[in-house]
Length: 133
Image (tube, rainbow, N blue to C red; front, side):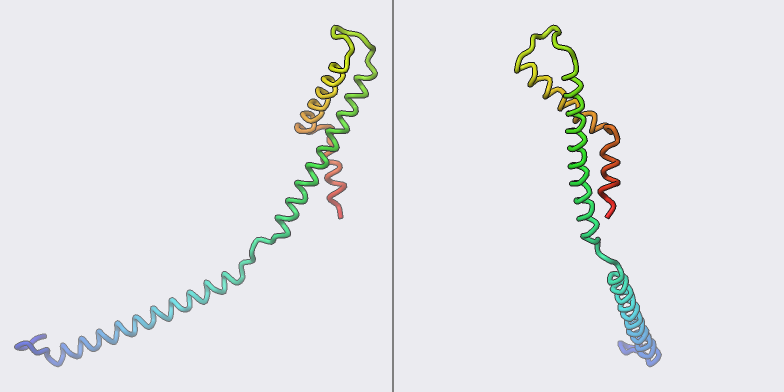
């Protein structure tokens, strides 16, 4: 309360009390913030970073799978090549080097396609065998 521009004693008391409440409230809020920060810091310390071993292992497995698929494609290519060699000579197209090269490239492309869609299961069998350490 104001009396002729002066604050009454109860007004001074109320303002002082309010100031103390603000100060106490601020200190409590500051303390709670510090506790939360400490908890957050502890949580961050407990979180482990992604292990590079997992990424390395995945990369190694992908490289192994690619090599094994290449082997299976080569194996299927050789099977197709030998199967073609067992066929009797003749046909609509006369025998030539160009025909031999074309058929070999065709067998190779077919072998790669067969391997991509699952092949004979050789890739999976070799992956299981080679992944055991």
